[in-house]
Image (cartoon, rainbow, N blue to C red; front, side):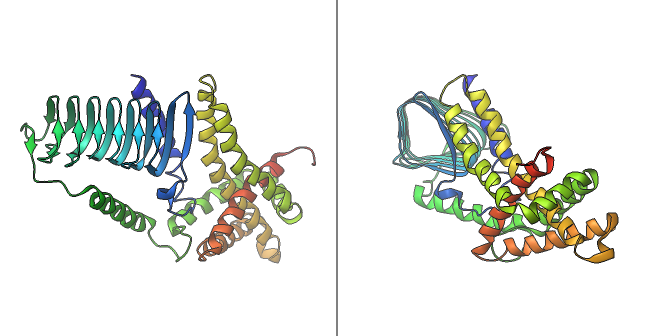
Length: 351
């Protein structure tokens, strides 16, 4: 039960956090880190779009992401709970291993039992499992002839009711990992749709944020005007406030999550971080659009003028984000500046 709650919460965080990252035009380099991680006692909690874990942990590990890889350098002293689209376990698990995934490859040592819920489970030639293997899947587990399972293998083959089969040797773990990584990157390119070359913000994503900015400008015209004035006169303050949010909030989350009492608060703060990026980008589009409409004469007056200004602002920022290398700075300025502009727009007293 405890593991189920952890996995459910981490899965929610992954969908809200890293799931929003592509729409916000972040680079796809999560494989090298860019993870949210905290520790409670000797237990480690980690979440990322593509998480590679390669170190020792005295306690248990709870991990979530689109791809989760425990390399052969990973050594988990306690139980491991993993939820992802694809999972590869190559290291050592000192306790039980529980996986919820579309595909999973176990090619390491597990001292306890293995439980799998998903579509495809594979045990590689280096798999050593001291306990039982229980899996719930519509397909039969693919178990390499060299894999060692000291306990029982209990499989629920919902599709055909067949028993467990000893399959042909599973692809070497290095090849399997590279195959998944390549497929993952190809899917990310397909998911982007039409996009200018560079830092990646899809055209549908730009339209989506542009519509949100138009809604903000029409529903809160006074706040939008204040944000426009802040963009023109206090842009440095706005950027500083937004940067403080982006950098300071993760640090605060880690500090709060040190104690068990603070974990619920840390979860709530973690939800606010990606939401801040969403609203920050929307605020920048609304303020910049209002600034443009105020500079194009009579045509920029009224509701239509504001809409035209936001459309132009969205196009300019989309093109700016698409510039190679510089796109990262454009994205950071838009998001951080927008977070600060939200404060300037809703404040009642000057700084």
